[in-house]
Length: 56
Image: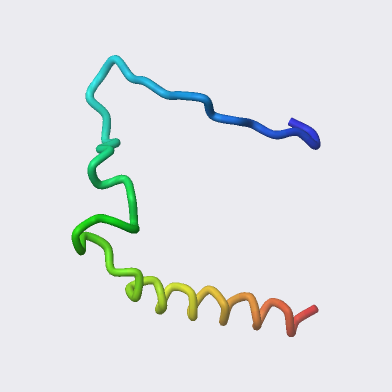
C-alpha cells in the first residue's frame, strides 16, 4: 500500500474470538482499565527515544 488508506467497514467471525464488545473500550469499562497504568510505559518509552535522539 503506497500513499493510500484503509477503511474498515465491518468485521465478522464464524468462530468464537477473543474480541468482546463489552470490554473493547477504555472509556466506559467500569474500572477494568486504569489509564494511569500507562504512565510508566510512556515514561520508559520516552526515555528510549530521548537516548536515541542524543546519539544522532
